[in-house]
Length: 319
Figure (tube, rainbow, N blue to C red):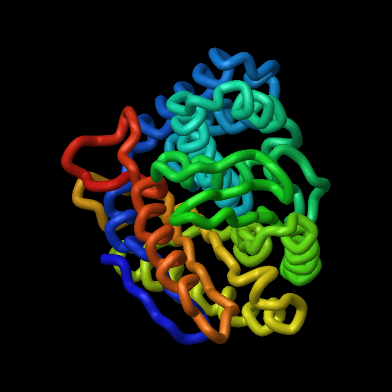
């Protein structure tokens, strides 16, 4: 159920408890879906997918499936492999949006940039690569799958909804120390666009590089991710208020995505991807913006949790 707060953390969008439960799949199912992502990208003309970081995920996942157990891998390798599943789940939603979009040319231009970079980060502050474009595409995919009008224009995206055009600067900081630098850069980009806007921050790598939620009860994992995302955004809101007028940047979209191993599933260990979006607003006089943000947030649920082809029937929304 969607919950809201009108305090400093802004309104909160969360169906996380359901999403972790709904996104549980067997290893083999995840590998089959990854094969489908690769084939879809190649079908849309994205070159060298098999030789890219996406092909690296595919090869690593097949090796993991063929291993006798997770104990055949070091803790570091296991966390790295599981962490790459979050990239895969983003890619899956991106491909779905691109295939359904009436802006095929614009999407394909973005998709061709996705395979760049190494499959696995050796350190959270590794050089920029296709992951930056991927987060921008992921935000666009969620919006488009929600039925909202989005365009790949400066600063990164332009969203039109409820009679308002809003600029979105999408950032994917690689370390805790780079979060504020990325936030400030996003504020500046939104300000230059001439439209009010949001800075979207993917905090997954910066705050939880190499982490995985291990649980026997998915409700505990849901609570952990909710608290982590909400507290991170709440800490950043004063920084936005001190660096931007409410007419420039009216909020932060905080995104966190982590792999989950549920050891308590009755059919054996299941793999899931936990997802949360939290929007913290900066306006002192909400006026019409609060209604606008709430409406867009409700609609984004559809794009975040829309069941995709290959999802198991009767399991709820897929992460």
